[in-house]
Length: 138
Image (cartoon, rainbow, N blue to C red; front, side):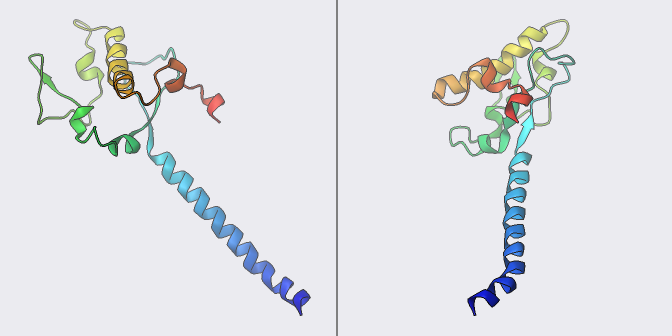
């Protein structure tokens, strides 16, 4: 009787394996949507690989709370608490040909990310921890 049951179970096993695979792949695809490349039009040529940034994960960190912690706005050298710069590239404020250089823009990115990571003693701070060679990641 046990031997007759095995052939009947094969289709069920195949379906279960396919369903498990679909769940794993859909979760992986969803997780990838959370990761965005940090791109700025001011960097037409990159010295290091573009940073992959898990934005969704950062929105869940309690001390960040509001979007304007990262997407800040300054007027007359003072931070405007009730405004944010969502949808703007960092270069729109931190880089303009007459005032700031690309090095100033790079410094702004590093102060924003690395500064927070160092202050909280959490997150990557070395160059290669953020600027990863894609071939090494895969």
